[in-house]
Length: 294
Figure (cartoon, rainbow, N blue to C red):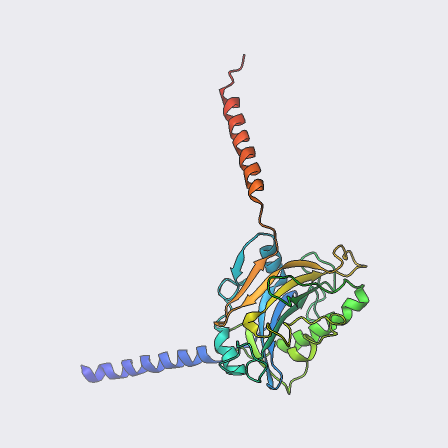
């Protein structure tokens, strides 16, 4: 009896190992039109780390309601971004989050995206083509930032090209063992994050979508980046000269990425007014019910 049980048990163990091995195999990542990308890079390090945060429409929805959302666990898919902190440690070292200008602890990060893509010519979210999404750093966290001035379609199309060259390179790369949304890009590859997105002149003179590279707030976990939507001025956009601020991103040393809506929290007087209005309506309905037709 014991000998007859050895073979099935061995087969089951082999099958389990094969399953685990299959799960560990890398899968290719795919970008969709209108996705936002979170990119990390560091001077002196030969790889960039990029995470697809999902469609900009998700953040447009979050921006409409006051509050803070942990994107790491509550992303657009509901499954979370995975353990990006472990990936960051693998690429940039265990001190990736530290506030220091030395190699290994001066990681820079930013976010960029656009409504149209070379992967698809269709318009998304009902926004004009060449609408851009990007972050601008708060020089002092909590003090706010200023986005670049809105531009015409031709000017914003140049930036669109930068974003899409990067997007094309992202699609088809292997994901990491810790995140199905993330990939590591080697400096030997073309069109990686560091080549196109964080360049100072990509969004206009003196505009950098990453946090400051000097001063007190250079560490990833000491910075706060505001997310803007920038529509072209000659294609239905331009109502906001410096773009529309949707909210802000912060990052913790444990790799938690939070998004806080820019929507204003109602003043206490507003809540009081709404409460009085609701009480009046309730009283009115009760009095109406008590009226006996004559």
